[in-house]
Amino acid sequence: MTKKSARQFSMVIITIVVVSSVLYLILFPPIHKYHVDRYVPAKDQDTLLTNIVTYMGVKPRNTNYETRLDPAYRSFYVKQAKEYRFFRYYIDETGHHYFYIIRPARHALGNRRAIGGTYNLDEDLKLLNYEERFVTQVLDENFLEDIAADLFIAMINNDLNDYLANRMIIEWPDSRLSFDKEKKEWRYDVTTE
Image 1 (cartoon, helix red, strand yellow):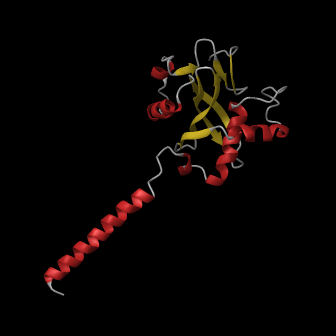
Image 2 (tube, helix red, strand yellow; image 1 turned 45 degrees about the vertical axis):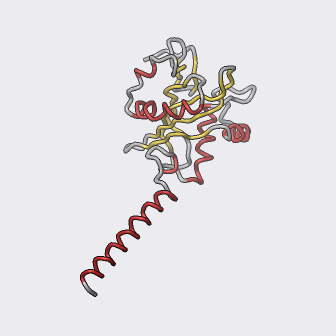
Image 3 (cartoon, helix red, strand yellow; image 1 turned 30 degrees about the vertical axis):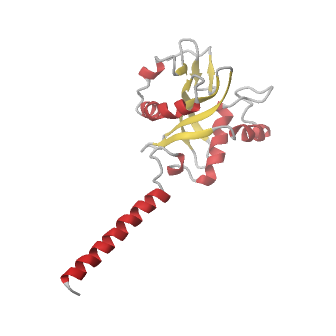
């Protein structure tokens, strides 16, 4: 093989590798750093989301924070979870889980809101230390997705103060309503530490 043909052969190989790499990235784009698929196996995502909805969602009639976990109500939450979706998700180096879920909202001004929160997880996908850090106003879903980039990272960094002061974005917590870590729900009767 001559130098010229060797150089041409090398250029063809480099071109094939570059084109193949570009096509691969187009056909199989990398998963976003904060996408649930990076952290939770697909087979566990529905169960995990339903477990979260058990706290976050509408409770069945005649239940309270103590009885809502009764297995008799599981199908109620499974049905409700179909309207919720993980938009951002992250697990830090200590195993602490962070979520940003877009969910339905019953409001005349719109039909979606986002909730950001944290928890730890046991091997049976049971939520431990579940806490909702914020609930957004009812907003357009595209806007909820747009603000997620900064809002989610602020939550991970425990730096939500600027957002919590913005009543155009955050509905809760506010001066009257706080998340009760024991009852795992938003309440007016919570005393802050």
